[in-house]
Length: 117
Image (cartoon, rainbow, N blue to C red; front, side, top):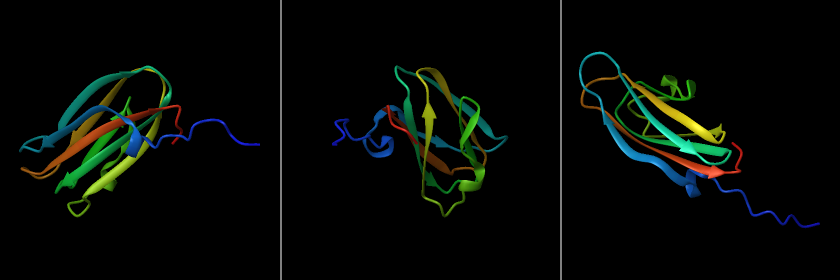
């Protein structure tokens, strides 16, 4: 029996862009906490893609759950991608950036309805 369902979309390659791309550049002083609210209309999967330009520490959270932790960052890691399940409704993407000054990252958040991580 053939499966008539359409193939699942990989949110990292074919998902709808919800937020970004946005570049965050580290300054001097205490770690910087940033947040971006967003809503989705259906259950599915988000994909957070980060292009790292020399940061050694950052953390991304989706509704207070870590998606990408600081152990994934070091100045030699150029790209990080991670998927997480997300239900319909309002959400907040949080970032805490802590590294040397003048280092940056650029992130994009994508979404695919009905997909699973």
